[in-house]
Image (cartoon, rainbow, N blue to C red; front, side, top):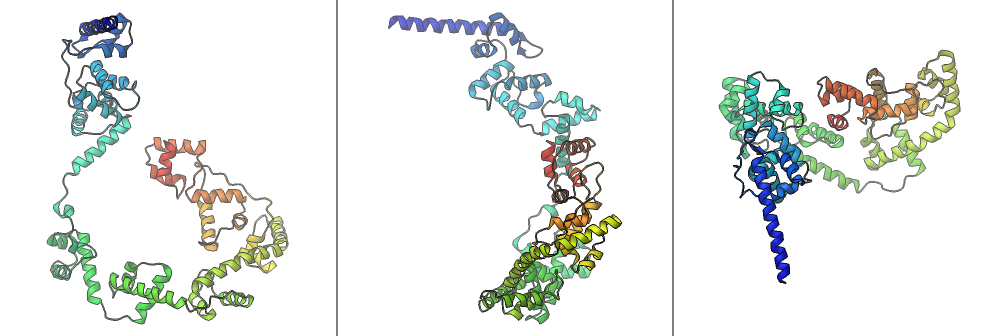
Length: 497
């Protein structure tokens, strides 16, 4: 037991001696100009790893004064660069022991090292940094030189962006009291009182519809003053009861999925709340009435009668209310059944007339090298759309390959117009018909439609074009608009990075 204690004492003594030796050499290697020790020379003399030397260093035995750098602007560029390189050796967040090693290496107290370390991993613009950069800019210093003096951010561009945003925030200063004032419940859109409307009426009589002056007199923004005036006009026109015209407008809004606010604007004699209440009442009445309609199975005679009633209407303007009343069924049931019948009719129609349509198309294309679908429709006795869907002849169809440098959106806009006219939502798009109309391969038509929906395939050429435009200083939203009409800036930014 005494031997073990003696061995422990011996090991402890050797550690103390080594710690004192490391501290002594570190003091000797201290560079007053840089304010820190030259640890490379200490490592060479002791032939020990740097981390072990730092771990053995005892600040209580050192005569070197520890630096205090509480603000980031107090750090020299070389110090910050050295700190960034040194902390990369530590994975994850620095522990207390890691912070002690960093403090010994930089000869800066732990709290200040922690502050600088946080700036390394999460760069941000502070008032001190902004003032320092502003002084550099006043002296005419280029951004690249400023970045070398303040190597906080990832790049020169990032530093410039952070500076510009902070400058805009500082330059804007405090907003006027009229724009910063919070609205009370009485001033909100739903809580405009009669007193507010009377007040704005008196001010409009005095100043006219000069909303800037009216707003200042009311201690409100011009937009709010105009909103109260609109509410006053609506309130002055309000009528009691509901006329047949007003009920028809509400019925149209319910059918088209329009909300109570827009319905109030269309009627112009009822408030939003009144329209909302009446629309809720009408919807409830419709649902109660639908409980009494015919819900039995559709017979072949019912289906034939439905097709007969729909035939006179334009496909995009069918009066389902009238048709449902004639059949004694619900509107949604008639609409849904008609869609089913159309889907069943198309394959049969295409199979029956495919040969005749394809022969007529082949004959016309061979003679004229172009397509006149009106002539094809007349020769086979079908509509143009039915001919487009039934045709199976495709010799001579062109290929469409997206090229960001040479592509023109005229062809894509032509295809979009055709799809919206013949296949409005929720009808599925028949790309066979689209291909025949455009006389382009079906797969290429589908790719073009995907591109118009903002679904970009990021090939090397497309990425190179995005990089080129970004290098010219274009914003992501402008690049997206140039590559595809419906491409979002977020997708371009993600692909670019």
